[in-house]
Length: 318
Image (cartoon, rainbow, N blue to C red; front, side, top):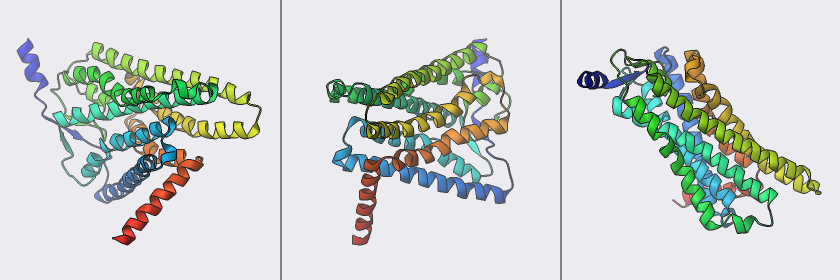
């Protein structure tokens, strides 16, 4: 019985990612649009990383977290978009079993890390606004270094179990995934047997992560808003709301789409809607985040202008 199960599990050596089935002309159009979105995402987030690294005024916990978050966005989009672009130009659209599960693991681990970083940023804003006199004593170099490490490693630890469990499911029928990434929901649907235990564990991990992080951010910002409302100075209120508004916009973009998709994978969303929601949080959100974070932040705008001027000077010198 065990030997048969192992043979069945390994009968699928690769998967076919259908992506967005359409005419060759539309595939080229998609390739152009998503290439532009990918380049803009890399450019915007790299500019923020460089600005935080080069500008001494941004060497504070808030901007260090933002710089790490932007670098995380670069890693996040790079796990899926290059393969999606290659598939637009390919007729086979194949991905090996190992590559598929590697993409699955890294994409969702980085996604979890983004949620943890949003929690870390919310905690930082809570300390800065609600405990301003004690902020420097609490947010020490040791603490924010630990939070940075937690932000990067948390997702990789959390998502290891679901990836291992789903990779061990028996895949013996179709190997066609009607998606543009190796998503766990269609992967589980391809399994020969309906493993309710794996589905339950996967759903439980999602619920704990998403509801836990979302409630933490919600409660933290409720306390922040109460503190801001009580501020006597109108200028202080505007500054605090301006800082928090950009972060809340990113939180809504991230959690709004992800919760619809993954809290209840057995709910059966239409395939087109699944693809659109995944496209939104995997491509559109990372594209928008640099704009959201920089447009309302004078320090960040000034630092970005310095980076752009410096880069222009280097190009002219060359």
